[in-house]
Length: 466
Ligand SMILES: [Zn+2]
Image (tube, rainbow, N blue to C red; front, side, top):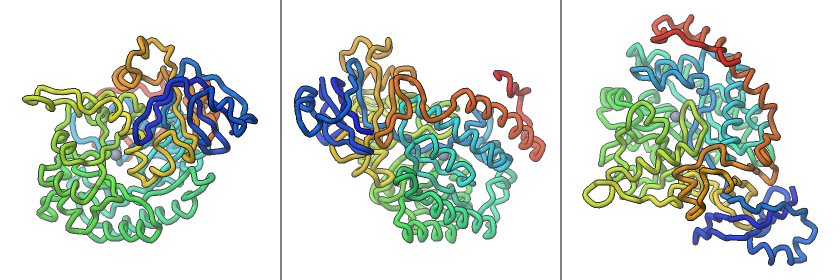
């Protein structure tokens, strides 16, 4: 799209983190052509041919990037958040295998819709059987980094205490990774890309970690893994290898600046020093993890070690406003004088976690993560005339502490509006909701029939809203 967006308050995210009043952004095709004072750009003959769109009363941000999510797990929303016990190997893994390809796609598109309405332009989404739904996600217009979360220990058996390595199971992941890269990497004009992922240290043998590392090197891709996500993972890795998860990955040569580790919840101080030294990025999912009780990640030492932190939503939500609000609280808790709390990180630093830091985590800082000439025209536009954004004394403070999906006015990716003036343009919204609701009952029924030990603690009301 060719467009001159005028008279906005623009939080550029450039090196100086300039916030420009009465600013204009010129978009040509998929890229930002110019950023500057509205009067100057309107008078510049170079932009005379561009149609104009007034953004008076709007705050323009670099497109928000969700650094770690699993859209398909929206199938569990409103259940395991409130149930006792481990949830990854109980429920999350079984339901992902109980779904058909169409059902996975139904939840993946629901996730994209929620993400767009929450002002998100990019999702980093590692999961399994991704090619079932990658084309449907791509059709929503979102920018994507997709991957198969490889494992060679069958995660459906882990809840029964079975950690035996299954090379054929692992080969299935590696084959699907190769197929996903071939089919999707660089597609849609480069809007859809791949990573290479290992699921977690407790379900990947040294051979699997090596295979994942080699695939990433062969294709020149960034990597991701869950790390120290649960006490069970820590105990299993200790039993199998006599090491912490981070130390096990280091022994296998898996740590490096091209790796993003999600969670770090049970990392020790020595782990944090090791991960910082290796340049590993932390994908922190503060809202997701906190829903089952305030979590224990050593945020102070992580930040003090200079680790790059990117925020994600992980499971059952695509709302980055919750990630920013919970993240701001968690990253301030226990800091400051005498550990009574403090006001670091700043709102701009919190915003950085879902813009430039998240862009860097997938090796794309040269393309996205700020509003600067030459970068992709990925923009999140906020309505300052929403009650939560008034009074507008320090707009980024309003955004981080009080923002919610209702303040999002428009979302642009690659120079094309996915949502304009609160109307989503790329999906049939009522149909997406209906199809996901219908898929929920089928997928749950199939999972419960196949896994009699997973009966929910109370009767479920699937389809009740339809
Ligand atoms: Zn995850």
